[in-house]
Length: 551
Ligand code: F6P
Image 1 (cartoon, rainbow, N blue to C red):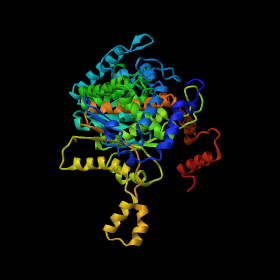
Image 2: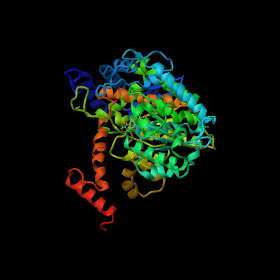
Image 3: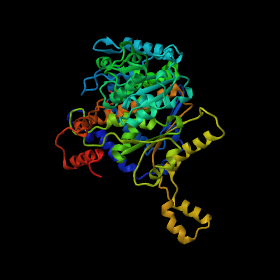
Image 4: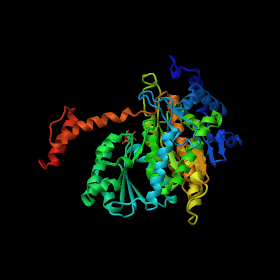
C-alpha cells in the first residue's frame, strides 16, 4: 500500500460512494430483478456446494467495486506466497503452510530450499499406522487390554479443530470414544476421568508448544491418575504427544516414538490437518481423515485458480468487508442447520477472531478502519429460540451465513424437512421482513380491535433488509466438511490481506497469561507484584475467604 492509506484509495472511496446510494435500496427492491439469484450464486458441481449470496445488499456495481478492492489488495499474490512457503507471517518470520498438509497433488512445497512434502508425508504415514493399530486392537494398554477411550488434552487450536471435526463426523465414527479436555478448571478433567478405566484409556497431549499452562496442568493430572493406578512404566502405552517441542515432551516422560511431529509453519488454529488431527483419524479412520484433507485441497485449488468473480472464499470475504467497513456491522453470525456442526461456530470464533482481531497493519501502524468482526453462532434451529430476536428486530445489523444440507445423515420421520424449512425461512424473513401493512391486515383478520392494531403493529413489524449468505451442501461427509472448513480459512485469510493485518500471530493472548503467571504465587501464599487497587483488593479477599479467615 506504500504511503497510501487504505481509506484514501480510489477503490475505498468508490465503495463509500456506492454505499451512500445502496443504503437507500432494499432487498425487496433489488429482488425485482428476476435474474438476481443467477447473477449472485455459485454452484460447484464437483463437491456439490451451492453458495447463494443474492440476499446481500449489493448491486452489480457494488460487486464490481468490491472485486476491484480485492484486486487492489493483491490477494492472489499473497495466496501464491502462502501456498509456496514464503514467510508471510512477518512478525514471527514463519511460513504458513496448512495448505501443504492437505496437498494431495504432492507437488513439492519449499521452505528455505527444502521440500516439506516428504516430512508431511512421513508424518501422515505415522498417523496412519498408529490409528490403524489403535482401531484394530493392535495397540495395547499396559495390562494388555484394547484402548477404547481417547482423551485429547489441548486447548485453542489444539482442541477446537479436532473436537469440531470429531463432533461433525460422529455419524462416521467406528473407532474408540473421544473426549476433549481443555480447561484448566479441574472439573473439566475430573468429569472425564471419572468415567474412564486407565487400563483402556489413551491420552493424546496436543500442544504445539508443549508449554501451554492449561494443557501441561491437565496432562500432569492425567499422568498422576494413570501412574497412580498402573505405575510409571504405563506411560509408554497410554500417552502420546502431538507437538513441535520434542525436548519438553521427553522431559514430561513420553516416549520418543510416541511423538507425532508438528512444525512451526503450521498455525495452531489450522493444525487439525496435521498431527493435531490424530484423534480424528482414530475416531473415524485414516481413510476418512484423508477424505477430509481432499475436500480442503479441492477448495485450495478453487481458491488459487478461480477468478475473483467466481471465487467463493473471496466473495465471502468481500461481502464481510462490505458490512464491516461500510455498514458498521460489528458481528457476523455462522449458523449451521445440522446438529453435528454444533461446535462449528465456536471453532470459527477462534479461527477468525484470533486471526483478524488486530489493530496494527503490515507497516506497524494503527489502522484507521474496522478489522475482524465478532463471530457468533450456534446450530439452527436452537438459536432461533434465543438470539435470532435481535437479528430480526434489534438495532444491530448482523450479516449471517446459513449452512444447510440437502440430505440428512439420519432419516427420521420428517425431521429434516422441518429443519430445512427453517433454514430457508430465516434468510427469507431477514431479507424481506413483514411490513406495517401486512401486520395490520393480519391483526385485522385475527379480530383485533383498531386500538389494539394501532398499539401492536410497530412491535410486530420486521423491517427486513438484513443480509445473509446461504451455503447448501448435498451431504455432510468428511470431504464436504474439509471443503467447508477451507472455505472459511481462506475467507479469513483474504480479509486479513484486505485489512493489511497479519492473520497468523496472536500476541493479544500473551498479556493475560503473563499477568496470571505473576498472580499465581500470590494465590499460594507468596508475596506478589504491585497491582491496581481493584485487583489488589479482589486478590486479598479471595485469599482471606479461601483460607476461611473472614466470613
Ligand atoms: O491462545 C493462544 C494459542 O497459542 C492458540 O493460538 C493455540 O491454538 C493455543 O494457544 C494452544 O497452543 P499450544 O498448541 O501450543 O498448546
